[in-house]
Length: 261
Image (cartoon, rainbow, N blue to C red; front, side, top):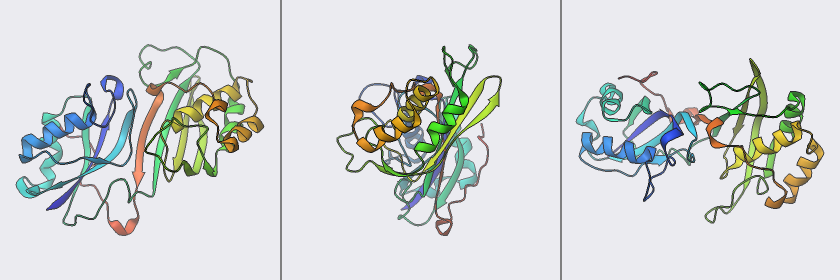
């Protein structure tokens, strides 16, 4: 038994989410079908995080345990899987480990998300950024972002999850970057994220930038741990799961740096 670690990118537009569901097309479902065709078994796929319907990923990491992992050489795995996967999912990194202890989710140190926001309307970008139809102050976005730095209980700015025991996360970075042409990218890095957290935070920050709330009011709402004090949630299509980082001693090194056909 070995552990196959995969890094993948996907366009979430036509998926109901990452994880397999009874009804609807999922990233896990497509990956499971490809793995079964190559290895003759349908292993459990364990991701580093979860993404909802419409959310994209550039560097999602998953692991699977395989009994016949040596069936094809490791350098051929990306090409073999990509030949079977639909065009909106691509493997862009792979590692085959002889141990069965590595865990894509529990071993992660931190995750990074981006959220893309635009003042202007562009039909070619509409699937990948929130094109906001009202004015806002970009300086207020940065003021609001600073509120969420540090360790907090993010109950207020999250969706309810019956399986979640703790909503405490440590946000290491939360900042907006101007991309030119009236476009902005939020970079947010944390040890973990709870359900709907980034989209809830973006909605709250935009409320602040529109003058509907102050940064001080956001801080009060955060500490209240009351979802009734949240803001309208941002749409999913502007959100991208960028990457996940593991402790160096685990030696997570991918053999492929680009998606091979």
